Image 1: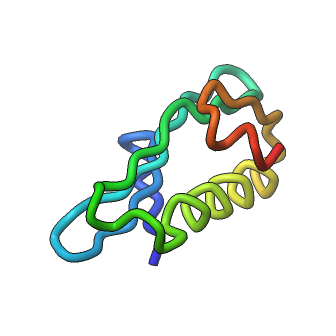
Image 2: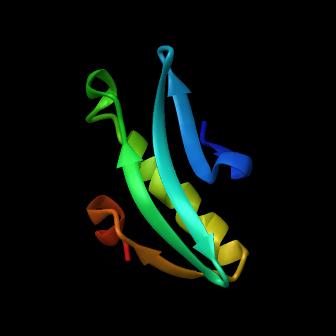
Length: 77
C-alpha cells in the first residue's frame, strides 16, 4: 500500500522492513518527480510503478503541472 508522506515530499511503500520511495518537489503549480528507489531485494515486483501511479494520480487531483527529472517517471508521461 502506497503512503503519501507530504511533509517529506514523498510516496512510500514499506515491505519486508524496507522502503521503496518516490520523491518529488513542488514549485508553484508544478510538481517535479525527482527520484524513484526500490531496494534490490524488492525489485521486479511492480513497486516503482505503484509509486508512480499514486504520485501521478495525486498530482492530477491537485491540478498540478507534472514534470520529471527521474528517468523512470518520464516513461509514464
